[in-house]
Amino acid sequence: MASIEVTELRKAYAGRTVVDGVSFTVERGEIFGILGTNGAGKTTTVECLQGLRTPDSGTVSVLGLDPARDAAELRRRVGTQLQDARLPEKLRVREALELFATFYPHPADIEDLLRRLGLEEHRDAGFGTLSGGLKQRLSIALALVGDPEIAILDELTTGLDPHARRDTWKLVEGVRDAGVTVVLVTHFMDEAQRLCDRVAILDAGCVVATGSPAELLATTDKSTLDDAFVTLTGRD
Ligand SMILES: Nc1ncnc2c1ncn2[C@@H]1O[C@H](COP(=O)(O)OP(=O)(O)OP(=O)(O)O)[C@@H](O)[C@H]1O
Figure 1 (cartoon, protein in one colour):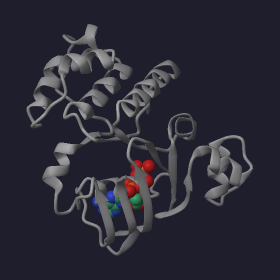
Figure 2: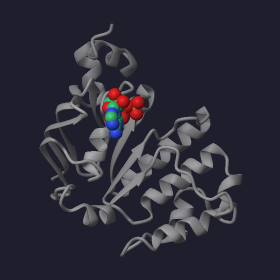
Figure 3: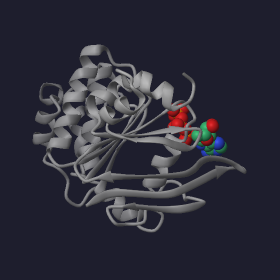
Figure 4: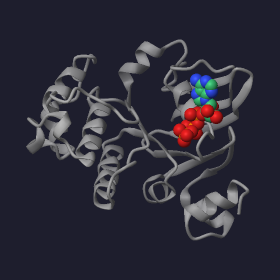
């Protein structure tokens, strides 16, 4: 069964169309990448999935619900990792998780989350003292604290060193393997090639390709998703 179905989604800001007939399906239990250049409409599309923006036309179904109508229920069932999440400097890792857990009716087990995300030994560290990689791990943990069916992760590894990026990718695979559907918004093609089961490539508000990274390499006859992306977005 599909977790997310988007059909002919359109959204304009002040008369300028930025999402122009986007359609894609995210299957349950996969890591689905939404890829695109800056301004391609990725964030607007994801905000429509979360009920944060109302589409001008088209339909969006998330877990069989309409985000514009059922936003409250979806907030409980969809976890979101925000770009540049900021918390009070002195708030400790464990306290942040406990605080966010109070927002949900059936939160995840916090000890289990600390262990799965490699945060056990940092549980008493204040947010302000965490490295970029640890902040990222905490933001993923916060996206999972409500025990969601879908996790939306935006610009997952921006600013992380190569080791921290790889550690984060393993964590996300673990999240998928635990049965959570993952939507990954990124403009890092190496990340998408390594991590995503399927992707949709957006360019100027339109989907120019969907498929597994291997399928997109085959159709473009390229060896990296980076090269395939450049071909598919017509700027080879
Ligand atoms: N609230 C808004 N009002 C007006 N224009 C907006 C608004 N939000 C986004 N836009 C514009 O809509 C277009 C699509 O933006 P969006 O953030 O959805 O793209 P994106 O693919 O996520 O880009 P990025 O990778 O830079 O985050 C951009 O040109 C952006 O400037």
